[in-house]
Image 1 (tube, rainbow, N blue to C red):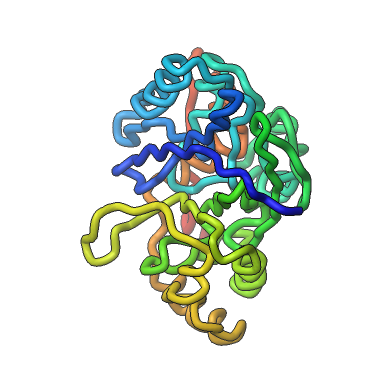
Image 2: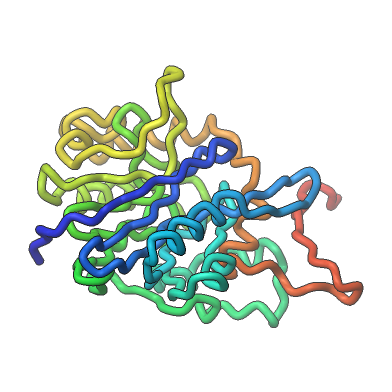
Length: 292
């Protein structure tokens, strides 16, 4: 499937979580999609706010855009999704890989979610399989299953751009970790090869930037740049060499600060767990090591 169209891409950077969300526009029809939105969350206070989401909503309303899709590249472990909030204001459908069910099964057990938590992906409006096609206005798009970081990771090829989620970072940032439940470094390597097989000039948009060396934040590169100079995968690194490097690096990484609230919310398509009998909503933190 050839992609010759070029969407208009507007990034929104959240410094607290180093996350980049994207508003993707077909200028011909004013149709748009939002990729990997961020809900502002003060963990210590248990308080949510909507600064980034409101900025996106304002842009959509101010330009008279029609929101078609709220795209989640995967179940994020480092920020909460604002997709339901944006959907309430602007419409659109929330979409994710059909492999979300694997993530829901894993983390439904981790958080001891009861039978009220469906593990069939029904919290999302549409589940995508590898190779599924859709469109933003007149711009053709295709879903590419890219597991390894998580089982449900999916890159989205939209015109001449690919939105890779956490699978790849900027070339000086390397690649995603593969040590979360359901992750696998060897699977990640093979997924990345699918992205690197796209045309050289394909624009690559990453979901996070941690500003290696203190440089300015960046979010756009190309397939050619990734193939040549990515510090983990560039220059024809072998699968075994990548796995060895990735697993060694992962063993030294700490868990993301917002992993506990993020996964509980994001596996529910951005919705909070149901309120308890006092009317308040709670997020769980599993505690280990207490049993004798």
